[in-house]
Image (cartoon, rainbow, N blue to C red; front, side, top):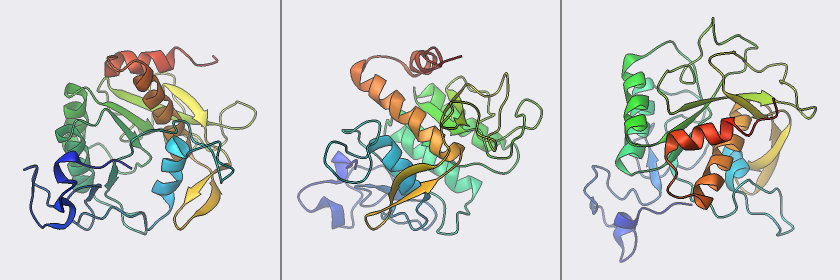
Length: 241
C-alpha cells in the first residue's frame, strides 16, 4: 500500500497537521472522498477485489496472485458501502492523483451521462501524464452509439477496457465498441481478494480494468521513462486480435 512520504514517519500520520501542504490532513495512505476523511478502507469489497487483481503477492501459498507483486497502490475512495457516489467526489479523487503525481489510475466505475467537469478532470490527468484505465461497462451495449462514462471520454490518456471470458472471447455482459473500446482483459468469474482476509469470484469489466492497469504498472516498472501515451499504445499493440 502506498504511503504518502510527506505524511509518514515521526508521528505525521496522526498529528492532525497537513504536513505536505496538499490540502488533506494526515492523508498518509490516500483519502476517502465520500466521507472526507483519511481512511479509505473498503466497506464494499469491490475495490479490494480490484486491488488484488493488480497487486496480490504470489508464490506464498496464500489466496491468489496478482499481476504486479511489488506495486504501490493508492487508496482513492469516492464510493460508499452501497456503491453509490457523486461526480464531484470522483473529480476530487482524480485531481488528487494529479496533485500527487500518481502515474496510472484504475477506474472500475461508471454511470451517469456526460459531465464536462469530469471530462476536464480526465484531461487534467492527461496533461499531467497519467494513464486513465477505465471499465467499458456491463450492459452488452455498443459504446460507439450508446456512450459509457468515464470510458468514453476522448482524452488520449483513456484506455477503455472490455471483458473477456475463459475462452478468450468477449464476455456476454461486456460493452464493446469499434472506436470507443481499446482492448479486453479477463473479467468473467475472477477470484480475488475481499476485505478481512477473504476471497470471492466477481465478474465485470470492473475486473478486466485492473488486469489492464496492473499490466501497465508492470510495463512502467520495466520502462520507467515511458510516457503515458506510449504506455497505452504498447498495451494496445499486445492484444491477440
